[in-house]
Length: 637
Image (cartoon, rainbow, N blue to C red):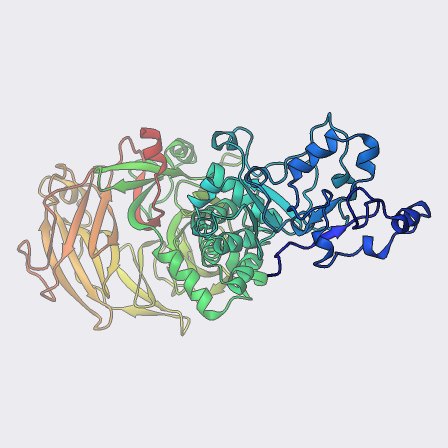
């Protein structure tokens, strides 16, 4: 039966196969002449592989025993010995000859020992020789707790040492190959493997960049390290930018890396306005991807009730600014508050940026961004206050403020609304002009102005069924509707109420108007003990007004009911002022109500609190906030 012996390589300077102890004159003569024998440069055949330095049929010696034999023999004897290396020494892929050798497959020779013939004769064309000075794949002190490495991993001509127990505990790939002492890995780059091994030992992914994250995530999937793939994606997320997000997305889609693709989509959704304005990114996305980004933007996090504290005490939207000093007094209170239902309290979310007017400005929400435009700018050198044309934008996904293109015309007491992906700045103090903002082009353009003689200041405004509704007036109220498709304003029927309007809000195809009971000229009756709230509803399609409730008293409200502002959330209208927050629930059963409490809607019996120590007017709105601890919770902790 033919012996199964690993092939070997015969190197120059060795004795050719022959009888024990006999020299080979032909080979020695060739060495003296400086010519290498052909047989010394090629792997020997099966018969040649049976010739060993001992001259008998014993198997080849291990590296450790060969080194001991070289050290024990005299120098003259060592120079005449043959050096026979198995294919394991050439390709580093075979099995070791002894258990000690398998435990230490690449133990370097001691510095005190002279360089062995094995080291001098190793072929230079071997691709698996470990580079000198190659650092360990784990941090110093981490691998020492697991003892000596018992696994050699070969990849792309490099060798890395590791522990089987560590890798098998984290990967099914390594667990299935735990019996191997030398493991050749394909389909993973050397740099990616080093990062993955370091993560397997420390649980922290370091060194991942946008230019190598794809190969790291692909390597993690190939080596069945799902946790590493997610950690690599999380590590590269803060490094994404407009310059590299599309390339990362393209690579992720091409290699079908779902974790990396989702990270790129998340970045684009969180920075939707910047992506929208960048043709190199947004222009290369498909229609389905654009819809996906906007859908993720609008549905991310949870919808929360917020309120902006703007303007000095007692100022109502539509009133004239009294003095420039009022803006300076209100600067310290220009903050955004968020209501936490679990805790039953309001907490500060952010503050208006430097330079944003806190009085007479308009605000609205578009693409889950909060926009603040216009207002009364601080007094100039001449001591006079002037309207502002600045526009600021708050991104809750990144908790940051930025500026956008200024208005074409400076405006104070402006009504700011969002409709069909655009912003509309309607009127202002003694202004009839209207302008529209296109966020993709970052440009304001003029649209049809308010009808001549409409009103000096628009008191309330809302959007419903794709149209803008604005009410106002001094002697009598008027309701105007703007149709963006026709770019024109139309007159709408107005109800017969002569009471002072607090606010107007849209909900489920209706406009709800809240009036403070009492004649418009008798403010004491409106806010006195006998005052109440009357609620009217306008059907935008039928163009009819109906009364929901009359002379309602918000529960727990003070004797002197102050004007409030409204916002709709989850089928409920929240009425907010500095005294408290009340929830009005419209009735879904009847078109119109009576003077009794209940048929057309009512206030919830349990009132909500109000932000503490607020000096300005509260403007409520709804914004989706990310699911993470906010600033107030962190400060409380």
